[in-house]
Image (cartoon, rainbow, N blue to C red; front, side, top):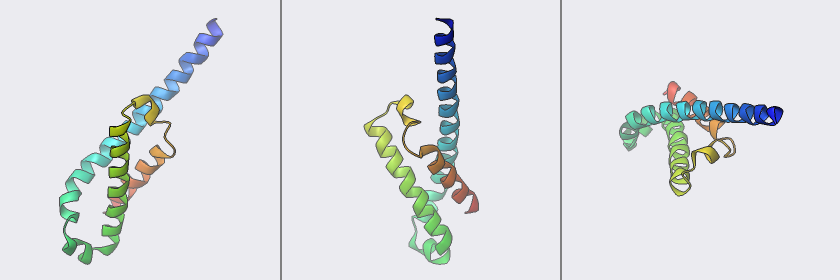
Amino acid sequence: MKGKLRNETKLWETKLNNMSELIEEIAKCQRTWMYLEPIFASDDIHKQMPTEGSWFRDVDTTWKQTMEGIESDPGIIDLIERENIKQSFEDANRKLDKI
């Protein structure tokens, strides 16, 4: 019994650490997205900064699709198991850092 409980505890520890890292990536993305979204809402900015505008559109799409998915299925435990979600937000944050 001790071995099974230890294994289950390790599994949950890993899952919680992964969720914590994902939540940090999402929060970082949210802060920057909220700041940049009104700026990149302008077509003039996209004309002046086409590369950055393209990066922002990519992030905006990731952000909106993920938030819609969370709204329809808000289970936090299942969130980390969505395919490539952490990698998507890490990529989004790299793009936002370049902007």
